[in-house]
Length: 168
Image (cartoon, rainbow, N blue to C red; front, side):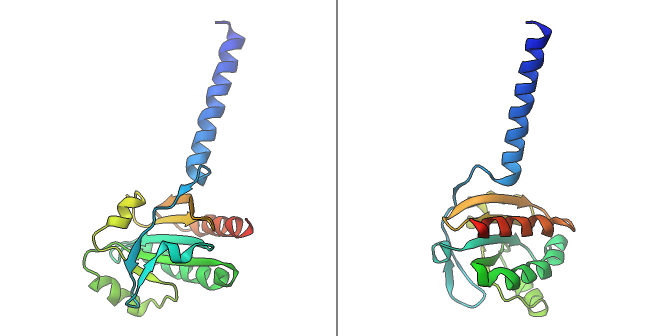
């Protein structure tokens, strides 16, 4: 194989790898979000089907998770700012015993629904392997973006996803 053919092949492979990498980061290849129903902090059951037609941000968190505690006030701000536009934030606590979560939520007032995934069934459906994990679901019910972990500044990425999905 000549040098120019190898270079063209290398460029194509690099482009393909880059496209796959970007797709995995942005969630460009969407799939239907797994449906679920979980008990909420308010005492009722909330299902994903009830939220169809809205842009949904699922945030899987635990009370022992420092980054989860750091991002929670930011999530509350996003919920308040965009909920009138068809966006809803849903917190999904992943702890088997919710006492610590309930205790922490008394101090950290949130207006968005908080659901309890005590047996981690929903966490497994969404392949949650890091705390926190955030999933964006479009108005049609497709998973569009998955973000694992949190570090200061990630909220800018969240806002970009919210705005883009609300425009669709």
